[in-house]
Amino acid sequence: MPLPTEKSNEQKHLLPVGKEPMIFHLIKQLVSTGISDILVVTSTNHMGKIVKVLGGGSDFGCKFTSAETGLEIKVPVRNGTKGDFPIVSGE
Image (cartoon, rainbow, N blue to C red; front, side, top):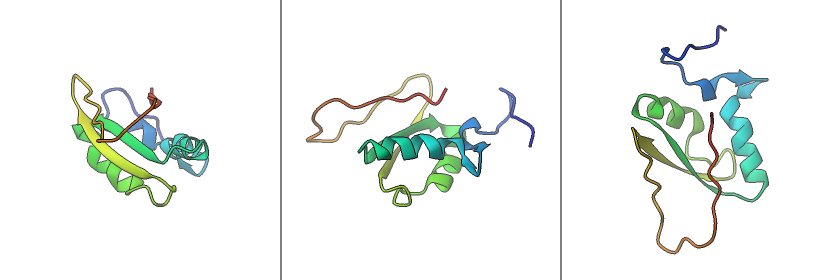
């Protein structure tokens, strides 16, 4: 499979690394540290494909919330959220 170019419509995080998409490895690592609520932020162009591949998170033992971004990122904070949270870039 050829690697996507910057102008292609292919989502880099869905490229296989071993037998699974690259993003699966990151999610499994986050879940293994006890993180169970993950916000996935991606562009409008890629949101549908990401959500379709990831599902709701139950296959990973977590819950996904999705947010689309353009030029700015708005991180939704739920009522009652306390403490620090990690931000992980896929780039």
